[in-house]
Length: 304
Ligand code: SF4
Image 1 (tube, protein in one colour):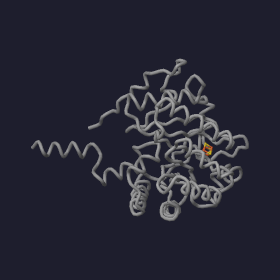
Image 2: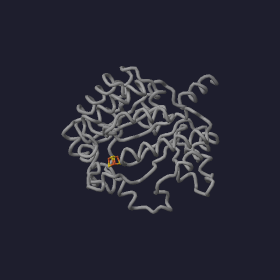
Image 3: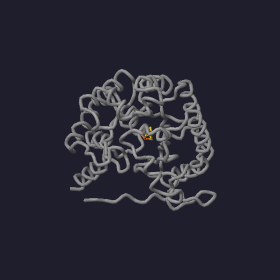
Image 4: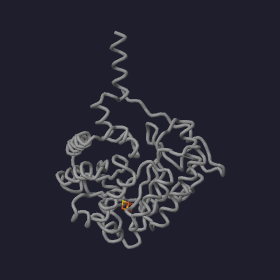
């Protein structure tokens, strides 16, 4: 049986100046909401976007009226408060394209202030998704601002493929080694299991991705996951093909096994990730028999 998710109540609401809240934060199911504060990435200025990414192409395809512009901190604060109150939301992710680090950190701090003000919560269970800053000392500021977790996406484990696929991260943002150093520092500040890094699966050999997940989760304390690469329209890799589904499912199962072996719980995964219905989440919940369908089966068995 297929059931459709219910439309969240805050989607009907508007902010103080009439902006529809459904253009400020999207509901990613199971109490998780997400704001992409901008649809522009500064790496585009020198033609150094990540090859799988279509953020700038998306911005060019839509208008401001369609919710593609910068999001104002007070709009975000109001929207998060409404989602927490009306829909029982309990996790918020703030993400966007690459911007100069000073501008990025200042914006995140103002957003965190607005969320605390509107929700009344000091710990609003937020994840700050950021690029690797050249000045690592600013990582502390995100924690002080009230974010519970932080995410910095390495995207590709193989250094040479990273250089080819993520030229901007390599040339404008310190390169692969600096991104790993950033993750190490984030774990020092936020703690094990409160730092996430994603690898885009299907752009490098599976063995390389698994090596990265093993390294980050066991040695680094980073809750590292994977998402399947889709050949996004407008990206440099438009028209290419991701590996077959069976390749991805096998990878997901192996990633969950590594996460479990290194002691990461479902709750830690929930707190770090923007979408709690990813394949990694589902495999955790299938193995734990904690998906709603298992409860329904147990009730039916009792009734019989
Ligand atoms: S850093 Fe890469 S993945 Fe992130 S928005 Fe820019 S181009 Fe896209």
